[in-house]
Length: 99
Image 1 (spheres, one colour):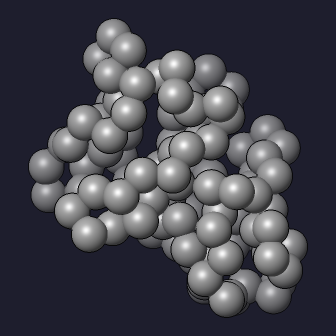
Image 2 (cartoon, helix red, strand yellow; image 1 turned 180 degrees about the vertical axis):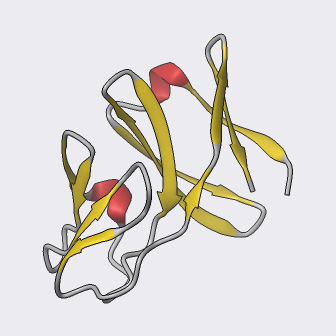
């Protein structure tokens, strides 16, 4: 794994989809930080980057499963499995993800 530049801070409002090294990822800006998890909901592969964000929780737009964007932990059904969470670092305006 290595940190890859994936976006600029200004592009994450409050979410952004990116594809890096064959991985589909969702970036989130919440509570002054940037977080990154897999983009696909573990229930039916819904795009989490298109979900509704409240605090540090994202709701899948397809079937309303919820995940913690800081850890990838599933918070509500119908999803039963967590999504992968990735380390993020911000240098100036540049956002990097460890993929």
